[in-house]
Length: 336
Image (tube, rainbow, N blue to C red; front, side):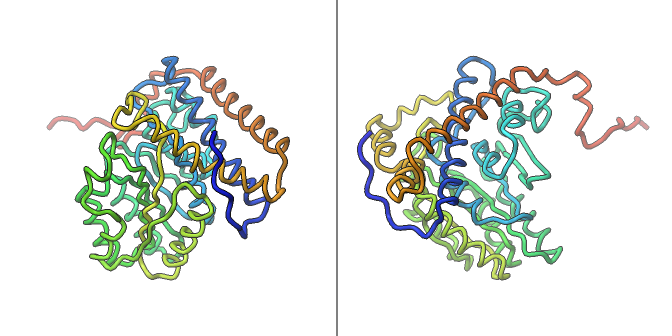
C-alpha cells in the first residue's frame, strides 16, 4: 500500500480515535463477511456493501445523542452497526433467518430497530427522504430537541420528492439533516454524467436551507460537520444539508462488476484516502496505540463478525406462521 499523506493535528482524544477506528473496522469486516456469504449463496436478492464509506456514518453517529433518529436507503448495513444494532441480528436478517431484526422477512433493505430509532433501509430511491422529514415533524410536534439524520445518495438527489421535502422542511423548520452520501457513482453512472450541479448541497439554497460539502473519507471532518448541522437543527433553525463526498470500493451491489471505472482509480483511493487507515496512522503517529493494540482490536472485531455469521447459519428459517405477523389487518373483510 502506498504511503498516505501525513496526518493532521486533531483535538480528538485517544479513546475517541480508538472508538472511531473500531466502529469503522467493524463495518468493514462485517461487509467483507457479508460479501463472502453472498458468494456462498447464503444471502439472496440484492446486497449493497458499504466498504469505503465507513467514515460517513461513524462520524455522524459521533455527533448524535439518545433520542435522535436515522433513516437511509438500501446501502444500510453500516448505518445499523454504527447506531448500535447487534451484528448477530443484522447478519441473520441478511440471510433470511428467524433471528434477524425483521425475523428473516425483510432482508438487506428492510430492517428496523425501534430501540435504536433506526427506521430502515428503503429500496425505492429517494423515497425515504419524505419519511425522514415526517419523523422530524413528529419530534417538532412533541417539542423535544431530537434530530433526524436522513441519508440518500447522489443519484437520489435528482429525484423530485427530495425537493418537495426540502420545501416542506424549510417552511416548517423541521429538525432534519439531509445527508447526501455522494460516492461519485449513481449505480453505474458518474456524477459528472448524471448531475448538472458540481456541488449538490447548493441546491438547498433555493429553499433557504444552509449546508456544506464535507470530506467523507475523513471521519474527524465528518464529525465536525455533523456537530455544526446538529447545533443548527437543535436550535430550531430548521433543516441542514451535508453533502459528504465519499467513495465506495465495491460495485453498486454484489451483482455489479463495476466496469464503468478502472481498477487503478479504486486502488488509488484505497492507497491514499482510506478512512480507516487515516485514523490508524493518527493513532500510531501520536502514540495513542501500538501495532499490537490495533492488532488486538482487529482480532476482536473478526471474532464478533465470525460469531454473527455462525449465529445466522444456526438460526432457523422463518416458520410458516410468520406470514401472518407484522401485517396491517388481521381480519379479511367479509363480502356484502
